Image (tube, rainbow, N blue to C red; front, side):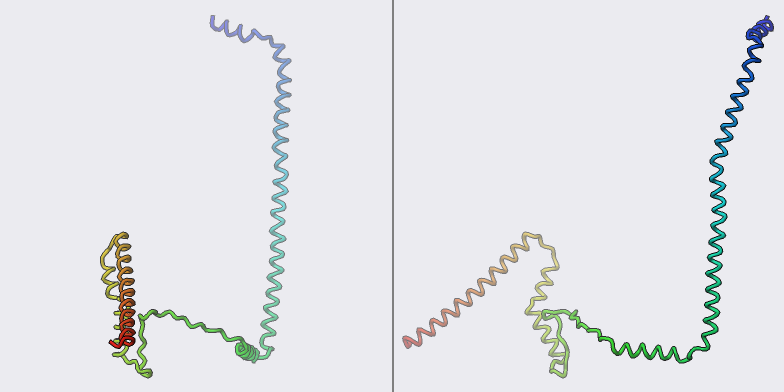
Length: 202
């Protein structure tokens, strides 16, 4: 039964239709293959041209390089031939001319840089001017005491908060102003007393 059903299915389509459709299928397949071949052959043409130009370019470049090398060789050969025939004192003359031109150049101005410490922190020892080592040390000690170097060093040993620093500066300024004004008033009083003694004869 199975064999009969298979044969019926296979023979359900008439053989005449198969023979009619088969040449059409073969023609379409042939056309597709020819189109694929033509499409594949088109981009291959520029690659051939590129390869030809690539092969030609190095040849031109090599010719240019060979010409350049030939010219360099000829120039070096001519220079080596003409070298001994030149004046052997040319080098010494050139050196002499360069030395003469250096003498005519404008001298560079030298700027003296004062990089040493200032404001009484440096004392020069100059025996020819009368300041030997002992006197220089005495001058340095006097300047250090006048600038209160020891007081500043002690004040920088410990950290103080910003508000306390402001208060200390305010107190120090007030003391300086009070001392200055007090001395001025004392001198004025002494001057007035002297005038009273002169006028009244006391």
